[in-house]
Structure formats: structure tokens, C-alpha cells
Length: 239
Image (cartoon, rainbow, N blue to C red; front, side, top):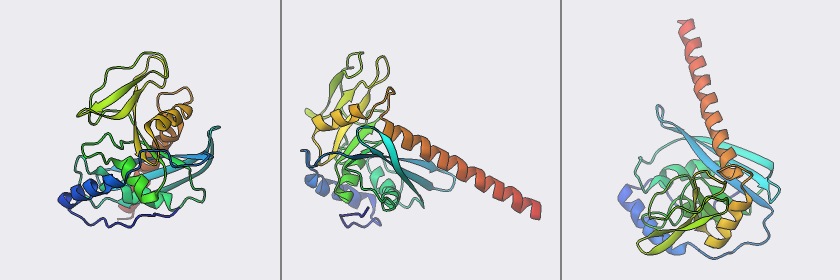
């Protein structure tokens, strides 16, 4: 899967903010996709000791949610940790994982925000523009805005409002569990984003594509850390 929008990553935070303010004008908030056959979930895990990121992408047949492919990438983080600019830190390793896919998903769910961002350009928007794919942000916690708590039954919704603008939906995916935050990334309407996320839930709070991607990248990090520890032990024994 190829990156469609050229960009450079060696920017300072001030320039990254300007890029967000420019690129947010390109974000499409209406549906621009055909029949959905494949949906992907993407997530990351980090090893802060060595500044390393692990990205995982899992593709499922939609709406059956049968896994058809998974790919990963591991890469050092170059951009500093700056709240509101995390997509500049995380997108390069995500793109490396997407580049290894043989099956191109019709829509991408990512654990993060899209328009529900201080500059209306979260990682779901950034990734959507880079790949030119319909992208949806599915976050576990709020970043900006306010909302009343939705009803307790599964499927209950409430609007997420920031500065008078509706930037997402608070969605109860399972009865009596905490809601999640659904927001537009690119090439999808909020109404369709909520519907697709709801179709990707399988009795759990978090939609299956991002839930399984989260589990996988945690496993990748744990296995890598165990391997490093084992290598260190062997090196010590050789001294």
C-alpha cells in the first residue's frame, strides 16, 4: 500500500503546526468510498527506554470481521513528544507498516482522534490524507470538547462539541461500559463513521480491528524487550 501524499518529517514543532493548519483544509468530511470489503485497524506501542515504536495493522473482511492480513513495522522515533503533534511522531512507523500490506483496506480505523483535535487535524486525518483512504478515529478518551454522557444501552450516542462545533460522537458500544469517541479522519462522514465503528464491535467496548491491533503491538513490544534482555544476558555470560 503506497503513500499518496508526499511530505517530509524533519520539521520543527512550529512548522508542524503550520502544516496542520494548511492540511486540515484538505480533509474531506463526506463519504467518498465504494462498497466496503476490507477494514483495517491500526495502533502503536512504545519502548520509551530506547525511543522505539512498534506499529501494527490488521486487515479484516467486512462485515464478517475475519482476519485476512497483518503487518508490522518497528522504527526509532525522531520527532519529539509534543501534545497535539503526535501524528508527526507516529505516522512514519505506521506508514512503514501499511507499505507492507498486500490487501488495501477500504476504510481504516485508528486508535486516536481525527477532527476532535485542537487544530482539527489529529492522526486519523493525517493518516487519511497520507494514504488517501477513508479513515476513522476511535479513541478511548477525550482530547478536546465536551459531551453529556450517552444513555446506558449499547448504541447510545451523544454529540462531542468543541467551541460550538460538533467534532465527533460519544458512542456506547456495549451496555454499562465506558463510551468511546468516534471522529472523522478523512473521506467519511461522521454518520458513516459511527455506523462502521458500530458494525466492527463484537460484544466488546473497543471495535475489533483496533482492539486486536492494540493487543498485537503490545505483544510485539514485549517479545522485543524479552529478546533484548536475553541477548544482554548472553553477552554478560560471554565476558
